Image (cartoon, rainbow, N blue to C red; front, side, top):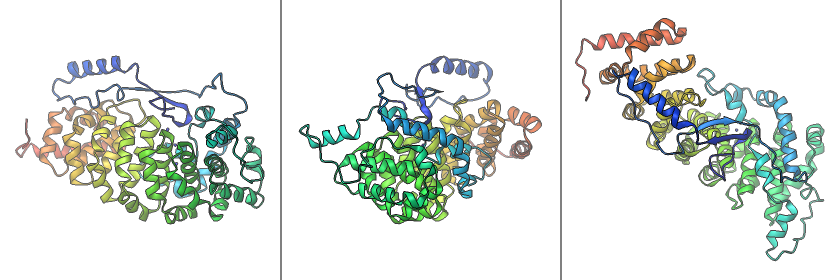
Length: 462
């Protein structure tokens, strides 16, 4: 499971771009509305006032550069595979019922299916890469072309027909897979890169190919490439492992190969796309309950929080989804709070229209399950942000917001007082009358808590 990015070196799948223009006027208008319309409330301060944080998100179809040669057939390959993936994505995801249905809170993370196969933004990135022949020249250091590896010319072929990939049976692909696995052991970085890229493509859509590649012993060799100093080799390797992890039996093979620590290393050091795909690979592995504790213990939470703060739009969504899944384990909740996850999550709740506010509220609701999480949410201005979400959010967002407020206030008279001070009663009354059935019930329960608290002193600092 996957995010051209917010810097010249950042890239995201599906051509999602981040721009930093157009947010100033929106922010000003929003502040004016709060000032004039919510004088009874303490308005939450804006988090992350730097230019990188106040950005608007736009979706666009990747444009082919005018200098891109038609000989860049890796780009053509990914374009064709992207077309095939758009037709068969549902089939490839549904091949694993647990992968499709692992979320138990509505559809807040419904775009998990979009990161559960290789959809990283390769069209633009590959257009900038040298061909394998040029890479071999560069590796020689003196301009001489290195002698090609004895791989029957396959790894040196740029034209890797997707029709062939889709039509050949796994039995007939066995020699091809063997060539690729041998290529992973090559002393040539270019050959390793090509081998990892082709295994990645072979595992992209077909379940039977994922099974074949896993059984053929590719996973340990791919795992070793996660620490390769060549960023594109690392990117192909992590994406290949992501694709392979969608086959259930391969999850254990990846764990047994010691890949968790290496995936965490990629989260810390990789390209934007590598970080996104490493996050999604960890998410795939976390579908097995006992892996959650191991992933957290290997240090995955802090770099996921870093991706949540500094990543592209796609990267933030991948980090949110992975954090949600991992934080069903209590120790990982504690790790997420300690790593500073609450502050950016609260900030995202107020970023209406980004597609992340609902996801952020779901993760906050998970963290509110522990005392440390509730304290951090209140300290970071979460009550004001959640009241705002009840006023202005989507139907589903209002459900998540009132659920989290209920968790914060159920056993805390102080938090109930803060909710009243933030002007929470009018939107809760409105929600109890016009919201969904779930939202109405939770709003009524929370209003009952607030009425009860009137009989007791409100112990909170002004």
